[in-house]
Amino acid sequence: MKPKEVLLTFDYELFLGTKSGTVENCLLKPTQLVLDILKTYQAKSVFFIDTLYLCRLEKENSSQCKSDLNSIYKQLETIVEQGHTIGIHIHPHWLDATFNNSLNNWNGENKTRFALSNLNQEEINHVVSDSVRILKPFLDLNDNLTYRAGGFYCQPFSSFAPIFQKHKILIDFSVMRGYKSTGYQGLYSFDFSNPPSKFIYRFNDNPLLMDDSGAFTEISVNSFQLQGISKIRNSIYYRRNKEKPNFKRMGDGSGSGNIIAHKNKGFLNQYLINDQTFSVELLNPELARAYTKFYNSNSYIHFVSHPKLFTQNGLEGLKSFLSNIINDNPIFDYRTMIKNNLT
Image 1 (cartoon, rainbow, N blue to C red):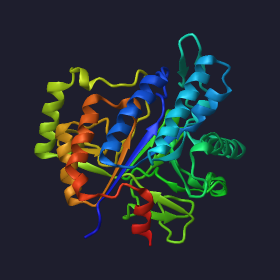
Image 2: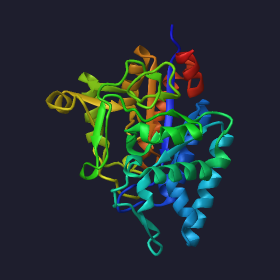
Image 3: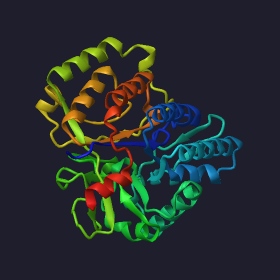
Image 4: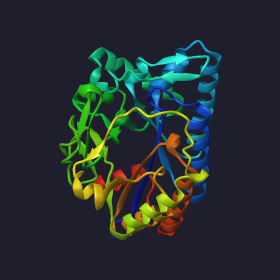
């Protein structure tokens, strides 16, 4: 029997719209809460850090920015000390974001350079090199580095494959299987409607073309269909509880407005079937049961979660899910997953 694989990943970032939210409420507090849960269940994870935000904090002449950066560094130290992996997450729109010191707020509404594909080659090389530099104290430079594209916008991958190879950024977590998206004024997009059949595979410079001799490894994001009695129970639970305090989002900012849709979206998807990725922010007791049911009949689950979107209810759902599966001794480490799937 194939071993069970549960990959827990977290995109460590502020909100990407007009109101960034605070470091305390979007990053520090929710991340510490999930670290406590992961420690309890001895589960390891990958935290993808929004590198260009850290670079902007570093350059900004503000005591608040310096304090925020120091607080983040301390938490990254804790993450590494507890055995988790730090990965690279790049949102180039931070190059154009503006900071209001009196409000302690970043405005990221300029989305013209939201994806790496919006930059010229010189800019791409600089941004990637700067991302590795800013995270260097927390990266294992003896191992291949991990990456998730901001907003999953990793196409065309060929435009940054050479600089990734230079820095040994060879493991990608950006392919959101079955989903597609077009961003601001059509300036960036991805289409993962037809990914390879394998969840973990090698590729060369196109993450949708499997190549067993490729330089890069893809660890793709899967989803499941919430339907039938599970969908009904989840809807009832949400309507009954959505106004309760433990449903309140911990982050205090506003979103970017990018829309991601599954290829099956339509009448059935809207009313009878709901294609969902696995995430902490969506979790509740009903969904924890649905996740467990999927886990029992499948060998691979890839969570993509955002501390800024956590609710207390979602964290309780994570505890419930992990308590349901932990006696199976599932594999949490992506390195072991790569070894099991590619060797």
